[in-house]
Length: 219
Image 1 (spheres, helix red, strand yellow):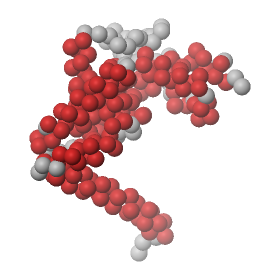
Image 2: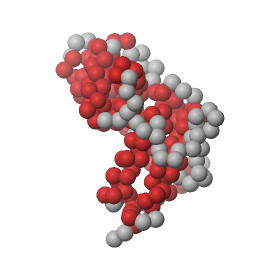
Image 3: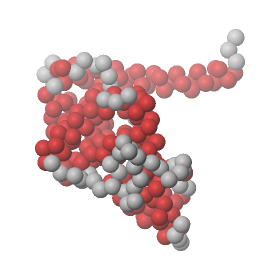
């Protein structure tokens, strides 16, 4: 016999699962209709993912203008190649992967360095970041995150991260992708995702630390 807790938990989770399955089914139907010629439905398919595509591109390119251009290119490439999408992963994961690949291609083409290292950054002999201690930038009190000064500092700190850390941080902490989805998008192992995410969070904390004891806590 089910306990009251089990019944309550099942009752809570079942609608969520059904909603997810319904969304997946609707998305598959949209893709099929687009493949069959209803191309005007493509925007409806990609509209929920416009923000994540843009932010994924921006995390690599470092500026909004280039990110917007690449996001549009990624959407166009997804449209042209939709017939080749085998649905072995989520459509959103595939679309983000296209955006990231396009962003990296643009960087190589332009031969620009669009980010700068954190001041006084510590690295080991392999070039990996060494945190000053084991705190995490997400430990900042939530009420402080409402301050304009800190929001601006967060944006500046994120922009200062090396690309491989900035990208994984956007995917994990901003877009809330799972470890496995992030690994698939970036083409790296799940263990590597965990390592990069941890180091990215620590770099964010260290970048924010100089102002933490003063201006951001003021009235």
